Length: 354
Length: 258
Ligand SMILES: Nc1ncnc2c1ncn2[C@@H]1O[C@H](COP(=O)(O)OP(=O)(O)O)[C@@H](O)[C@H]1O
Ligand SMILES: [Mg+2]
Image 1 (cartoon, rainbow over the protein chains, first blue to last red):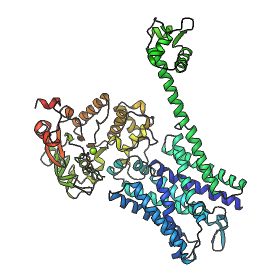
Image 2: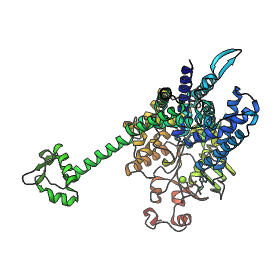
Image 3: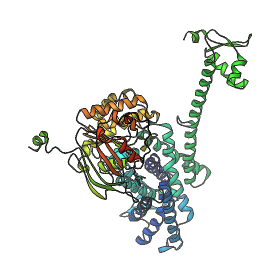
Image 4: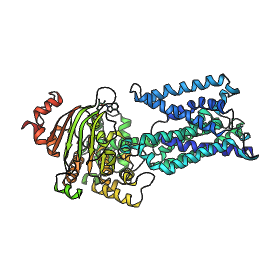
């Protein structure tokens, strides 16, 4: 049963993270997830100290609010025009994180967060921390909090998909149509912040980033439509959750690490094999170059006038190997005729007519 | 009644009325005390050096930049209340063309204004977008990935999107920038058609040589509005030398004669 809940928490976390991370990737602000994953730490500690209660939903909301503080601070600093968006993010989130570390080490109200938990989460133990309502056991608390995040993300996407897509692609058109892209964006980042916090305990600050960014960054290499990117990112995230959980069991280690590794591995596979990956692009480039070489050789020949191979090769300044390969391709494509006896090249009959 | 009076001419609101407009982004003002008045059906170019505030003027007319002082009226109302009657063509390079979407989908974004919040585009919006693509001779690219478009095709996609908005006033930011000759022709003829149908166009334009060919009115802008009027009245060497600080190339053909 514990295994079931571990897997359920991992899967729902992966799903919520991947869906909320997709628009970060599309808006080219993936680093915001990293920022949020660190900036919410003081929020968690403070909210815990204030409520004195680990199980309060207020904890989630309070910590998510700290993420919002980070977003607004970053925007305020950027608006001064002195530093760019990335730099102001890079200033704000470590500052907030360090406050969190400080508060943690002060053991405010008896908080005892461990550095490991912050980085790696505590997925293995999460199923033991139960949510009880009126004495009834409803399952692990972490499952309900990540489910709440998934629900929030899902509702936002169902209601405001069109608005989110528009502001991500063309914020200026969004403002000119009155869709208030600034506010919608901040509202969306608040949802992302909540997702980060809800995933934090189970997933930790590194896995959250991996789960938010890797699936979407992989998906955009395969498919060409925002909806399909969302769908594929979700599938890849689930695959990472299952694979990571299984690897964790086999290797007898915490599942968080293998989950992040799986997400990263899926990205590497995508980077290599996807239609927009490096292999396909490289192959297309090589094919185009090969065609260009054939065209260059053909361009040096006139219909019905065979020319000496070495002369043509000399004009092109190519190595014998490169020239030989180009000629072989041209001959096999019936573009050229190579007379090995006289060592001459000529356009094939079909080419000469055309 | 107001309608009827307005048709007789006397109280017809101007397409764009900018009075004493000052806009700043923090340092020196991007626009200083600008006055621009454009009647309906104007086909006007905004001309001026880099950083002159041309884009800012358009954004102020759209009501999307905060103004320090001054008044902006579009068709007699605050821009925020005229969004449905205004179409905006941003600078082509202002968006990420690697965004995973299709030509048709981008053009459908032009229908989002009439859809309003929460509603999704449906069959009707799709048909409108296809019609606009047809008009821009892009119909066979409808399902094409936007990352595969040439610069000229990108620009025509933006114009198709503006057409879908079916607006009265069109604000365009450098629609001729970096496009091929074919696209330049189709953009120019589109503007001409729109103006003939009584639509108003205000377009940032960089190529001084083609201003007299493509436009009827000109706004000469360099933080302050130096002149507004018909191309005949204001687009002459004296004004342009002042506008560009005497760095206007001498071989601008249409200018040489004036
Ligand atoms: N969002 C912005 N933040 C800060 N400064 C800006 C912004 N947009 C424009 N500016 C500045 O305002 C001035 C006018 O800009 P702009 O209207 O884009 O000029 P143009 O379109 O004529 O080249 C420039 O100096 C530019 O650097
Ligand atoms: Mg500009």
